[in-house]
Structures are given as C-alpha cells and as structure tokens.
Length: 305
Image 1 (spheres, rainbow, N blue to C red):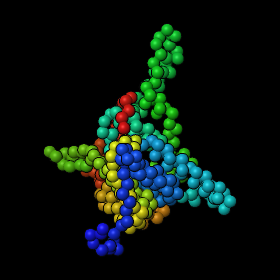
Image 2 (cartoon, rainbow, N blue to C red; image 1 turned 180 degrees about the vertical axis):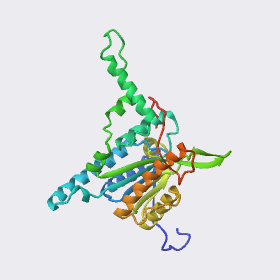
Image 3 (cartoon, rainbow, N blue to C red; image 1 turned 60 degrees about the vertical axis):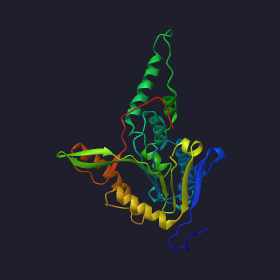
Image 4 (spheres, rainbow, N blue to C red; image 1 turned 90 degrees about the vertical axis):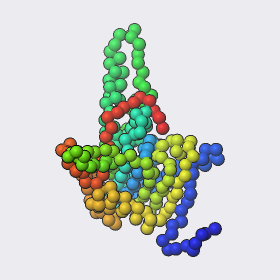
C-alpha cells in the first residue's frame, strides 16, 4: 500500500538480501549482474565499500570485460579502428585500510586481481620474504626441514596481477584505488587521520546503483544477514555520483556529464589529487578534498573475511 501518491522524482527499487537460513543470495546475484553489465559499460564503475575482499567478483568483472574487448577488437579491425579509438572503462575504488591485519590477505588478493595491490606494501614485502625463504630451501641440505609457503602467500603468488598496460590493452580499463583522510590544524600543525568508510555503494555508468549493508566479501554475499536496495535510475545514479565525487574532491569536480573527455580529465584529476595530498602530508600542509592513495604497511599470513 502506498502511503502517498507517486511523484515524478520517485524511484522504483528492488530490495535484495543475503539471508542464509532462507537461501536468499539476491545481493550476490545483483553484484554479479552488475559486474556483467559493467563489462559492457564504457564510462565508469564506482565502488565504495568498508571491505573489498571479494576476489571472485573482481575476477568476474575482468573476465567479462575481456570477452567484450575481444569482440570490440574483432569489429574494430574490420572497420580499421585503432587502439586510440577503444572505449575505456574507468574504475574508481574507495576503501579504508583493512580493519584487522588478518583481513589484509583477502583485500590484497582482490586488489591484486585488478592490479591494484602495490598500496599494500607490507603484504608485498611479506610475500617476497616468504618466497625467498622457500627458494633458499632448494639449496639447503636435504636433512633440513622444508618449510612450505603459508596458504595465503601461496594463493597470492598465483594471481596474475595485471599491470597498467595489460589493464588498458587487454581489458580496456583504467583503475585507481583510494582511501580517505581528513586534516585539521591542532597545536599550530596540520594533523591527519584516516576516515573509516562504512558505506557500501556501487554505481555503474550513471544508470545502476546499489546501496545497503552488504560488504564486498564472501560473508556478506552468502553468510551474514544483509539488506540492500538496487535500482536502474539514471537521474538518481547521476545525482549520487555528482554529490559523492564533489564531496571527495573538496568541490573541485564531480565528473560533469561523464562524457569521454569528462571521464578522462576526472580520472587524471582524481589520481593527481591523491598524489598531491600524499605530498601535502609529507610537507605538513592542508589537504584538498579527502582522497589519498591506499597505503598499508601491515601484513599477515592469516586470512579473515
């Protein structure tokens, strides 16, 4: 029953859940469908989440995108199009540092699938150290006990970790990953602290959005009780995108109409702002907006999430 008459600004939404006792995994279904549809998109995907640990979702996004790009390349060759004509999908990821050290490995795996793992430099160092130890064992006397790789390290080692060129040329994507910081003047000095993100928002191409309680991890997709809304609503999605991006940039930009030139400049400005804010912190200056490169020096061989 409607409590009032429908208005032109209303949105039609689907309520989706994760409820294991009722075997309801409709949030997972929507996220997978969003990945499939995003692979067909030629504008942007914006992911903002408390946990970014769902490697399977990242794999699906790139797999579907690669299929689309193969079809595009086949058609482009027949038309005589060049690589510069290829439409790029810009993927913006905004997440906090993993809440617990034990959440770092799964966050690393998800980011590594998208070639975004370098910010977790503590885990990078641990993986290299563990691999070096195992390699050194090959030259040790046979009577010494062989130490196997921890499962988390062995799994991370198998991830392909595409570089920037591969992401662009094979998958047709450009990706940046950010965390959020705030700053304030205390005792005559600029101080900085991380903004812990608790929101769970996914926007695709100014058309689709989902918002709710579900984290981007295995537990929220199949194990916990979660509730999201999803909608195909260009007006709502575009409005959310402009509000959120304007807020993150300190009002500097909002993506405008998300035309090809708009996204090219927005992606450039986004990554430049992240780097500049990192430099501002080193020089004890005021940040502009809240975007920072994701960085975490911690590491773990235990996997949660």
